[in-house]
Image 1 (spheres, rainbow, N blue to C red):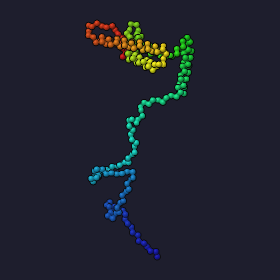
Image 2 (image 1 turned 135 degrees about the vertical axis):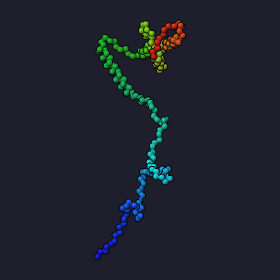
Image 3 (image 1 turned 120 degrees about the horizontal axis):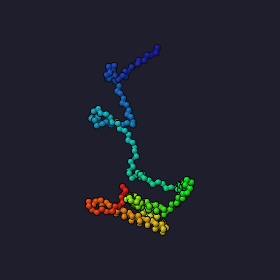
Image 4 (image 1 turned 90 degrees about the horizontal axis):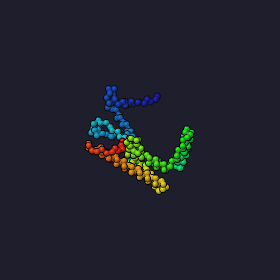
Length: 219
């Protein structure tokens, strides 16, 4: 006859049916902490209060912020054009101009061909533009209207052009530039003096003799 072994049943329940902790219940094992999260007690918890735990997140390795001197400039110069790019643009421009001239001559058979642009025409164009801004083209019976700031800018443009082309002009071209600048600068001085006299006349007391009317400035 087989031997009957006795079995011992251990009650491993932690709580009794009434909800109380059993005195012989085994102690609960602590759960392992998550490796990616470390908990540090707050200052209140260190003194025994039921404060919340502060989660300490891992520190991210961020690259150091670049200094203002290391930053790229806001406005960088464009790369230089190649000879092929310049030649292609010039060829396309010339072909378009030829087609435009052909269309104009077909529309206006009696029209003279547009004169070719030269250095003398560039100087003459700036010269006439400055004369107009200085009030040199007023209608009969009307005061000349002066754009003194525009005239100054045009004269300065002509001055820069003269400085950049110095030593690379023929004697006739150099004389043309010098004469144009001289006449425009003298005209500029004359107009500004007339405007100053006009402003002074407006400030004279009543009964004083009125000066001759001068040019009106464009605001």
